[in-house]
Length: 278
Image (cartoon, rainbow, N blue to C red; front, side, top):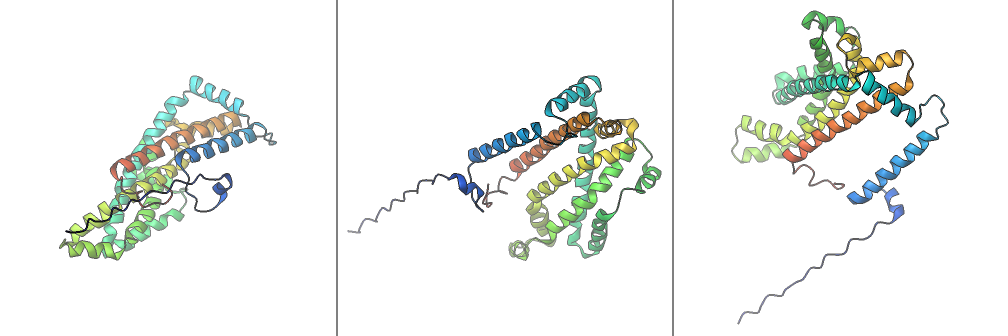
């Protein structure tokens, strides 16, 4: 009679409660609830510092809130915000389309010098290019989009080309052992294999787009936008209004960043499985 196999019971060790001072130690993994408490506490500290700030030039929260009401109900901040948000989304879509295409083309040696030259454009100033793009596309909304896309593409291409270059050779070899052709390897390893990283690069460049918006919309103030409104308020030294617009841009940018991150998690749920602090 065969002996019955031993039944080995594994009892999971209870989770150790995190001590207060351990949140200051490196490489500590905390729960979502603990992180929410930390964030809430730091926000309260920031608001207390803002309310009691010794800097007289810094407007108080109540002044910023009153300025926000004036801008929203009297000067059309909501409409200008929608106009700028649409411009940012259009520029982000065109930037992603152009930059991903260029980054993926680096699998062919003939395109690598071209992409490398485009990436060096991030050191160039926008001064002087306004006239060039005006001659190429004319003025108005097309000029705003062209300047914004040009300023974002050079950073997007740089980041995404680095992602493609850093793909380990083992992934290419593994795909070839499955008898894939080279173009199939490019699709599976380069395009699909870096899809989650492309979303991260897109999130970074969406923020760059909001930073550049003031410069771009300042050149075309007649078309409106929060960038033009911000420059007008700064010209008249209305600091509460300036802070109100900046905070509004920050909140909209965070909302957009969260939206892109949500799409990334839905389309690439595998991306964060191996991360320690997720």
